[in-house]
Every structure is written in C-alpha cells, then in structure tokens.
Length: 443
Image 1 (cartoon, rainbow, N blue to C red):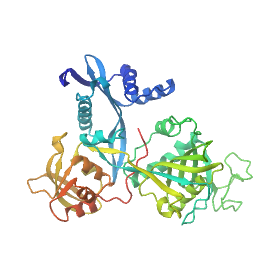
Image 2 (image 1 turned 60 degrees about the vertical axis):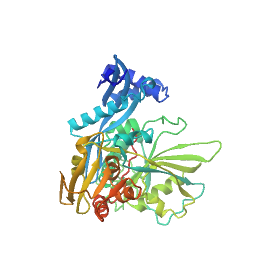
Image 3 (image 1 turned 30 degrees about the vertical axis):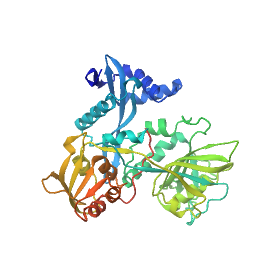
Image 4 (image 1 turned 90 degrees about the vertical axis):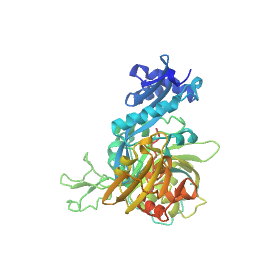
C-alpha cells in the first residue's frame, strides 16, 4: 500500500495511550506507570497529529503550543515532540505527511516558526529545519578551588526550597528571554513538572534539585530604627518576617542570579555536581555561583550540559585545563514556516537592502527572490524580479534567524552563494545579536 491508504488527522484524547505505546516502541522505552501518566498529561495540552491506515495508528507527532523568544520579541511556535513512525511503515511518507500537516496548521494558526530537538540530526534538515541554537557541555575539575581571573560577587548566597522556586525565579528567567533568543516561555507547571521534579528520569541516583540564588533576600532599609545595613535581617529575629523591630523597613534586594543543580555520590570517582541551569546578571555574579558549585563538599566534578557557546565562564576561568568544553551540539532546531512573517517579527541591528533567493521545496510560498529591506526602524520583504544578491536554502536561513549562525559561515561552507560582493557582510550586520541564542529547555 502507498500513501493513498494513509490519512492524517487529530489523535483524540482517547487515543493518547495508543500514541504513547507507539512512541515507546519506536524509542525502545518501557517507562514506569508514573512516567507514562506524566507523558499522558503533557500530551493533553499538545497538538496531536496521527497517521492512520485502516483505522490503525502508524505514525504520531505532537507539538507543544509554546512561545519562543526571537531577537526583539517573541513568537508562537509549535514545538515538535514524540515523533514516531511504526517500524512497519518506514519510508512510506508517513513522517513527510505529518510534518506537512503540522506546517499547514501552523500557517492557519499564525505561527511563522516551528521548532524541535532532533533525536537524529540527519532527519530534519530535509524538512527545512536548521540548527538555531548550539549548546556546550562543560566539565570542571573541582577537586581543587576554581581558579578565576575576576573577583566573585561577595553578596551572600542562599539555598531556597524548590517548591518556592517558580515564584522566585520565574520573573528573573523571563527577563533572560529578552536578552537571548530561542528561550521558551515557562509556565509554573513547566517549572514544576520539568525542571523541579524530585527524581531525575535519566538518573535515579541523582539528588533532588537544589536551587541556590544570589540576592533576592529581605534586608532592613537604610531608615530602619536599628540602623542595620541589612546584611542578614533574619539573625536574632523573633518575628515571622525576619525583622528585629515592628517598625523595620523590610526591602527585597533584586535577584542577581541562580543555579539549579543535582548531586551524586560515586564509588569510582569524586562526587558529581550536575548543573542544569545557571543565570546571572553580571560576570561577578556568575563567578560567585560557579565558585559555590565548585566548593560543594564531597564532590570533585561539575558537569554542565547545554551551556551557551558564549558563556563568560570560558573567558574568566583562569585555567582552561580545569574548565573544559567536552562537547558541542545542535540544540533547538528552527523551521521558518512563513519566511516573511518570521523576518518581520524580529529586530534588526543595522540597515540592510538585499535580494534573497530562498530555496524551499516543502513550502513553495517561501521560495523565490524577495527584496529584504530592514533597519532598526522598519521592514519590508517583497517578491522581486531583480537579480539575487544571495541564494540560500530555507534550512540555512533558519539557522541564521536567531543570530546563532552567520551567512558568511554558510558561504564559506559552500551552503549559500553570494552573488553581490558585500551582501553577506550587510546581512550579517543586520542579523547580529548582542548575545548568541541559547536554549536549555528540552522537550
């Protein structure tokens, strides 16, 4: 049987368990009942596309209705997950059909981009997805004090209850989304069910999550009756709010950074600190958090997965033999479903006027020559008969969209062609972002 026998339609709520069974078959998994329930609950809030043959589910694709930060703003973005094709139906166009259905729905819903984490990198480029963000794996030998070239922030650090973390960290994380593209807007449920779950699904020997923050504590104000400078408002207090006087002027200092981590004892090696996320306002604040992580008793190694490529740690670490990048990988893959709308939604760092010849075999509406005229103050993108200044495939344009790849790098790799000298330089200047895009939310 061919593609004519396969239909693509919604998977109803009653079909979620069947879809999960297919996914577990494809990914060779046998999760416990608690994890199955968690997956089931996640899929309740997703777009669910099924491929059916004679009423039997032979393919499944889900998409979270996330919002993702882009330079200068944010966009609705279906984030693809649980992609599964029955082993009996490989190479029959099942995946192509499900992704075509996803693109059609994204277009109808006004979502000009889509994204995913690729289980196999070779698969998704042919559907127009490009690696929009990269991640580093960093390992630190913490058997000796962490050597730094800068002085860490000397404000006190404190551990907070993970149950309180979403309320404390949520607004701070939201602020990072304006600084870096590629970041998903986290709901309180996402914080609790993905970031702060007690048991790590990949390694049950890891501790529950620990959350350490710099700043964000209550202090006595400068006009408080006791004259305190607020360095530790809770010491010696007999009041629930931590003040020493009923008239104390309590203020909350701004949060300057946080880290989420887990620890693990190991019989054959020093204890491990697995860093899941670290954010900081300043290099000094970041240095304070890194120094704290490297000084945790009974541990001798930090492993940080998914750090940004431009992490300042790699510059202010005094000994790069102690702080090593052990891996680099594509993280969030981006698809420009509607090239014009996606380009219109982002900001532009410098003026540019170029004709792009975009190749897009999957979505022909994106293909062809268009004049891009953009600046910090305006934007137009219109079809033209003028000769192209740059020819580029849509997957490679997607890799540049968030600012993580330059068009110059594409030309040097033979993946794009510059027809007009200077076009690449002008486009890269316009696409430039102050910080590289970064994503650590895997889905």
